[in-house]
Image 1 (cartoon, helix red, strand yellow):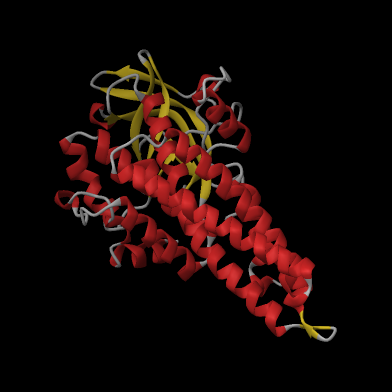
Image 2 (cartoon, rainbow, N blue to C red):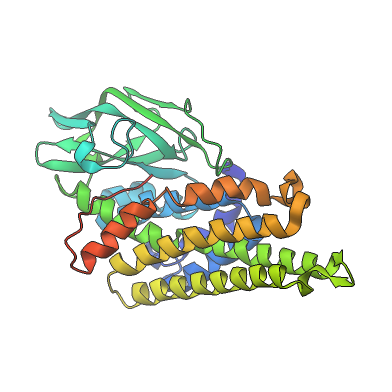
Amino acid sequence: MRSKFAELGGDGFFRHAVPAEWGGTGNRFTDLLEAHIRMGRRYRDPGLVLAVNAHLWGTLFPLLRHGGETQKRRWLSSLVRGERLSGHAITEAGGGSDPAAMTTRAERCGAGFRLHGEKRYVTNVPEADLVIVYGHLDEGISAFVLLKGDPGVDWRRDHRVAACRSAPMGEIVLENCRIPGDRLLGRPGTGLALIREALEWERAFIFAGIAGLMEWQLEQVIAFSRRRRSGDGHLGRHQAIAHRIADMCTRLDTVHLWLRECARLADAGRRLTLASAQTKLVASNAFLHSTLDAVQILGAQGLEATSGMSEWLNDAAAGRLFSGTDEVLKNLIAALLGTGAGYRASGK
């Protein structure tokens, strides 16, 4: 993962939509979107996509938007260059990503803070250099910058998942973890707003890299259907196969439309709450169903490790969980439409 991050950083991948004063290009989110699609085609690695987006939306952009000048000078440029790896820690073993069930606590200790708790399924841990961790302070849920090596923190990888395998995913155990006061990100008690904002942006763009992968996936299936003989013609002449390919193409184009809408809204400075939830819901299901179709069309070859398709089935299933499950997203969409359905922030 480090080598890929260094390669992406050297190519200026993390500079998109970041002001020039912090090492960015100052360009549009539309440019960021296109860069992510190209990255997906180049690497075809859902784990890398997950890791990249945790780095961007979990730490880099929250620091850019809510960090103080000292915090930005200390960490932002190295994150933009890809020299430091980062993420955010929300999920806990007992309550998932529900902030109401969060048990991690922070208390003031002299001029700093003392943290207690455990976070699980944290993307990029234990390799990350820093993460933003969320916990209850007297004023409410708050955000803190945590560095690898801080006293009282243990970064582990005890609970592995069989999806997005190239992305590190571990636990953070906080036992009397003492950090200085300048590690508070934003104001005390604003952590829930930061969580919601981070997930909103992540949902908007996390499937851009997957869209690039899906483009390659569709090309491979079309080429196979033309090459493979069946009866008196090639496989793609069979209506059952042709219909699956048509569905794959339609899903991919729909994902592209939703991603571009999110980029358009972002460039216009408009809220992404509804569009990002819809985008992530549509895209995660599109990836799963198109991967199932690809395996069905390729047959046994689709189950070979070299095809990549069979491993993507686990990755696609995971895509319906991270950054908010389908159920959470539907609740959010319904609530924004005024149905009264409940909504709670959810994430990795």
